[in-house]
Length: 212
Image 1 (cartoon, helix red, strand yellow):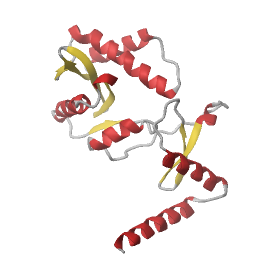
Image 2: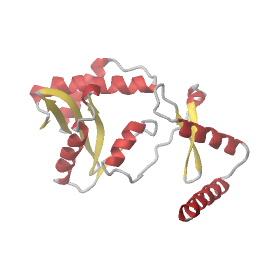
Image 3: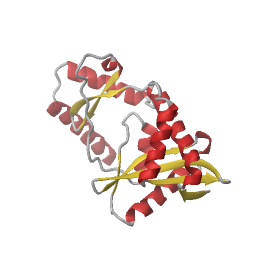
Image 4: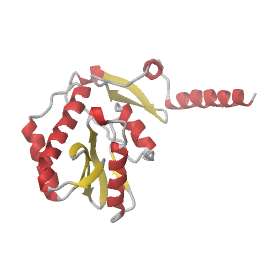
């Protein structure tokens, strides 16, 4: 496998991978894709403005990419994608490693957004050492929509949030049960302080049992 910086000759390869990235993402979300020409134009614009775009090649065939942009002095991993049949062979890890090398020539930190529904991506990024939560992106629908019918309850340090359900989710039975219990807890009048107290007590009991 070989990692190369995108050049004009490989632009069509990047555009094709970029379309595949969004086709998979929108399929998981249950949303429709924008017309392919829009994604192709975006890919061309990113290349022409000088984003860091690296391709993974296997036998000279493009199998994946990573794109890093620069905004207000910070570098952001915007997308990473490896063709499904080539996953698990190290292409994603190598793309990230090479992107980090490029960023280190200019900065010491690299940022990214990860969708909370994308458990596979979260596991990958945590293995790569990305485990500091920097910001939370919140949204409010200013007019009634049906999107609220497709949400589940989640929490962060006891604070209640709602997360959109995807068409294809990697959520196990324990996570589904925890989400339902949270919903029932908050509907019954439970507070942040009460939830944190319950969780602290449960963890303390578990640790005490480990000692015996």
